[in-house]
Length: 447
Image (cartoon, rainbow, N blue to C red):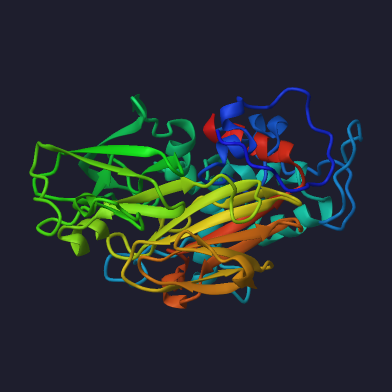
């Protein structure tokens, strides 16, 4: 793991030993994405186990102010849509009693159901992280008194294969051949689950996943990326944004190479001259192949980043197969962005689709520090909504200085909300009090 200088964070009483192995803790785990689920302390995991009654109890004594400092050690406890880009048909959910609350419609019941799926069995543990007054309000909003089934189920984003988990638990590691880093990947036909309830869609993926595993090197590294084509069709791989010395490595069939035929391998060799947030994807029958999942992140780390950060999240959007997706999934199966209060979170926005998407962060402005891998320097600026065009990459930093669960979504509204509630290009930024809370959340989700 590369060492970055973390930004100052509030002083907290952290455990002497990490809650999870170093490779999964803090920035080690969240190097490629931030895991969250609405808050979880280790002591609450058992209460959320299948079959256990949800324990909606008040946690440590905190001020009613959600941004009040954490208590000191020893304190006493106190969806997605279809490929036609329309909202997926679904039967509106009903409350356990079969009743629709007064003044509500079936839309309201269905919309709440989606958020219940998103947070799942992490909800009862919010009391161990947030102040009692906040917990009471959240419980009322979700209707925890209904003892609904999702309280005993993993969050939707944990029930599907996810770039977050694969990058964190099984990151793509190179072998070394002399002074060259060698990455071996396959190109495969896969079944992709857009969320935990929808039937899988026929897709394509690198190393049998969509997005493909993040390829990460340091600026100046010599790179050899070997791809074996397991498809029943030809393909090619383009490293998007790389400034090649040899144009024959550019990955465009019939311009710089012959296509990779089924069953064969092809090696791309180059030096990672320019740093930043780059991508790799098919450049052959690309409307179809990229749209079906042949895409991934290629990160070239410079000696010094454009701005300091504590955590990092890779955010790859697409809008063809499976509808409007973030990292190959639609809400509620999209992993949240997570941070401890006071931390700076770097989000690498990458648009692999065919539409522009204006990303909007509720409650926070984003500091835009790089575009297409190029630091903005004095042109860096703040915004709470900005558009990312197809092929563009933007690096944005959020200072998570206030606790809460904050919506984060594309602001083309048909991409995010429909008759059955939120779907598609929606997630949240969840800010918890301490890094220890982050570690506990991660530990529970990977258990």
